[in-house]
Image 1 (cartoon, rainbow, N blue to C red):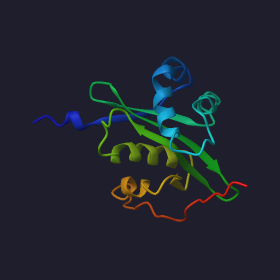
Image 2: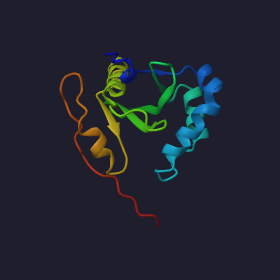
Image 3: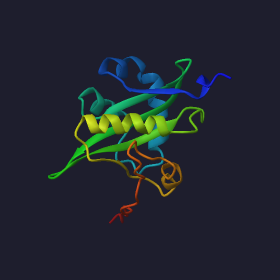
Length: 151
C-alpha cells in the first residue's frame, strides 16, 4: 500500500516565487480573507511578503499540486514574538489533516525566536485546531476572543 497520496510538503515562497505564482495564489488568499473583516487585502499581503514582513506558504501534494495556501506574519511585542497565522485555505478541500503543515509552521516559528503560533479567527477554528499538537505535545488554548464594535 502506498501512503504517499496523503503526504504534503509546505514551504515559504521566495519573493520571486510570490510574483511568479501570484495569479494562482491570489484567488485562494482572497477566498480566505473573505471570512475576515477587511483589515487586509490580498494586495496588502503581497506587498508584505515582497518586503519580508509576511510569509506566504505553499503546501503541495506528492504530485507537486497546490493543496493549501497559508499566510503568516511574525508579531513582535515588547516581551515576545509570535507567529500569527493570518489566513489558511485549502485548495479544493484537499488537505484533511493539517498536522504536517502546522509542524512546519512550528519549526519556522522556533527558528525565528517565536514563543507561540497564534490564530485570530472565527470560533470555527477551534474545531480545526483541537486535534493539533505541537512536537512537544502542547495543544492550542483559547486565550480570548476578539470583539469589535464599530462606532
